[in-house]
Length: 224
Length: 224
Image 1 (cartoon, helix red, strand yellow):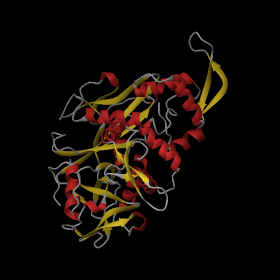
Image 2 (cartoon, each protein chain N blue to C red):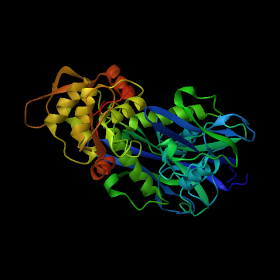
Image 3 (cartoon, rainbow over the protein chains, first blue to last red):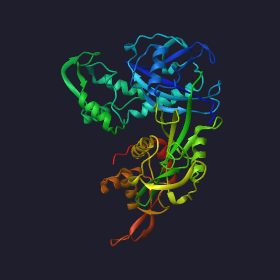
Image 4 (tube, rainbow over the protein chains, first blue to last red):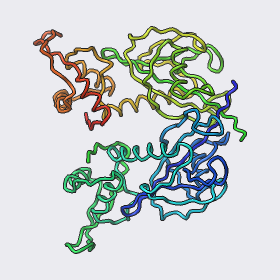
């Protein structure tokens, strides 16, 4: 079987920090698309798993080590890569950006977080991959709880609300949202308060770890 | 870039007919796994899209021509294929089996529908691919309406109920189900009745085409 097809992996790593959502990009060191921004990624080695390949490429090009990327979609249109037929399996994840120190190497001359509304022009079909990942992330919110790794250990309810509003990129109905989150029983109200702004001090919450991961496994039905 | 990786596509085609759910398999003509049953599929050609590849393989091996398969997942564990590193992009779909005449050719010596509870031992990691597809299909029910292509043009409500119960492989709460379907406004009640069994004649329904495809696009939230 003579098949001139090559295989890459690409990572769409979203970062969430206090109301800002960004994505991790690298500036390419080599042709094609030399000096253009792109998603971190590269060729799969013959003896490594796809997950290992994407974690390795991400770590090599950006210094970011994460091992909980999820498979997004496989992009394989003929012509998507000027080097020939290259098919890319894309992965995505959502992290707290300041948990990582960026360090570009190998095929990348620079690694940087970009606010998702201020993306530079991306190499290859990476804009399509990015759009697909964002849509999937927004969809995920409706069937999985979110925020455990992104918010502080103790947080006012408004932080969770801000997370959902940011990811969905729209206002959410506060009362309805609170009712739904409460019905999931995923938060523990702590016996502590914090002052944010001029109003009354706000209660602090923490995720109920057991319940959170149970819901993550079982799935939720969550219309915001 | 020296990369000895080959690329295949595989199709999980489910068939639904009046309470029975089956999957389309082929008996392999050549090694590896000669004479074993497997999902239809094969190598991607250099200049064809992935969708075109899976439709071509499906049609060549089984005679079934469909052009609305959806990408499921990419399976790439080293060792999943004894011929070397072979990565497979799997697709899935759900059809009415008797709309097709099966005809095996090329790499397949036989093509057959198997009830999903009576599967033979499958080649490669195809049982894992099958399980993944079934789980995805069951998940899909909760965010997309279903049945337009599977039920008769006019059908009693019990046919739709049976479809959902069959796919979910469990009893469903009839009253609750009816209430939810009604709230989606996806069915038109016709001015016709049909006698099924000893009780009163049952009303016939048809899908409201416009509303159905609108919901398919927008998504539904549907907990059964």
